[in-house]
Length: 112
Length: 114
Image (cartoon, rainbow over all chains, first blue to last red; front, side, top):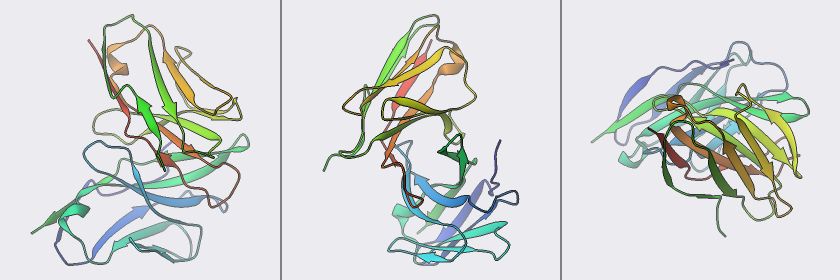
């Protein structure tokens, strides 16, 4: 029951902005979009999340289209340490609880 | 503050055996979720527990079971292990109940079934 699609891999030059797209065309009105990243098979690390407004924090920005069918994670100044697999996730409400549905992720490689 | 802790970090079992994985959530978090991550894929939801009750279950066979203790720690049990159960098992905790909640993941238990 995958709800997101992402490109399998992307490269980005160090110091440049990394823009990672995600398609979630079947998202429902109360379902949030989350982004996590995973480095070297460690546990996924939270980056940012949003419902319909654009969001920004110290790590990244999240741009959600007006129809909510897609979003873009922006890492403004990518560093080598940002090399990781980035997961776009839809959080659904099921049986009175939240269920996080991961996609297959985008492997981002930041190049020196 | 300690994050989510999981034990053991690595485990090797043979087909047909049983395994128990353990997880301690972040202090104050009452919800624990379990995920299975097969190599090259995203994590897949197995269970969620809140206040010692199962609140959600993914599409996994009955060989998988879990429980949550009064201190909110949790165990995941897998019986009759199959080769396909080889994966990274991730535990995540959260303070369930807010729309803006976040999941905090542990580093996982790498299970190899031979």
